[in-house]
Length: 91
Image (spheres, rainbow, N blue to C red):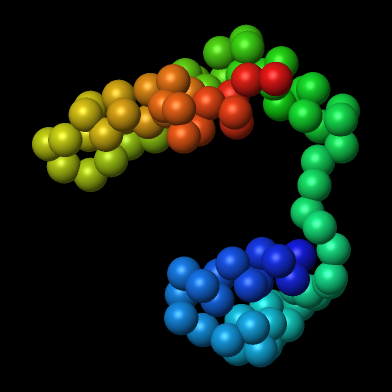
């Protein structure tokens, strides 16, 4: 796991890098100092999957508890059009 990922979790979980690293070590997960990234091939496969309807299939498989299940799923389905997230769905 990337140290940057651990550092991000420190911000959102109010823990220290050391405490999170120790928990991961106990699970036999090593923390290394590198920038997480995807290869161009991995990105091509991902974007091809998105273009072929993967996101809708994914959303169909998600179920939320309670009466607002459909509403939450619809919001999730609309994520690719949200300006905050568009770049994750388009090359």
